[in-house]
Image (cartoon, rainbow, N blue to C red; front, side):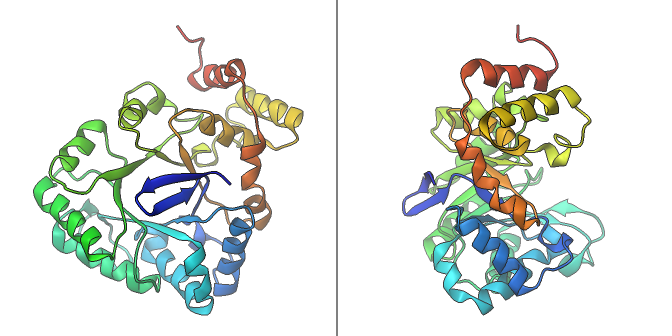
Length: 297
């Protein structure tokens, strides 16, 4: 599988497995989690995307329980995780209201907890999960710089930031922010024209795409013409509609890394089919036209 250089000494598989639904399945035992990771590795998918808040702050622990039973897998994967969302659940059950916290104290505590929960001595990529209106860029930037220098975190980036949020934080840092994980799909295509993607391309920063299937709405029949077109193209190329939707993102020259999450082993085994799909320019625009609901100007 193609790999993307994220930072010096850090490179990711082009397709990323997202763990946000790991706690939603009927079986989150170490054996079940390992089976999902192994199904990814068989395709060359080595990058695992987490956030401390996933599963009400439980998913990192479930993943760590698996690594404790199969520690050799740690050397075969890259771990991404996120912090700064504080919701009244799990370890933050005492929080009075959901909020963001980008103070150094919170970031450092989150990293220490993530390392312990996931039974690892380092995180390959740490992301600030959401823009914080109260962020002090000097404090947040210094905390991220120090974590990289300590070796606890190999690289840092952000998620859901607009270009100005990204620039503000980067202006106070020595380390380079290596990605922005943003929502992108045929259901949510705004990043292709609102400047979010162009900003990253200009800086040669590979973006990550969360919810690349629109949270399932791409496949639920609510957009019947778009779904039928995906199925038609998939049928022509021997893959399903999911693979075509992901290939649409891969076709873009920004080197997008889609983050895909499913608990179904059969679907996990087919994630790599997206790399088999070839979309010419007109077919890409055919899908884009259906995505935006009108002919391009």
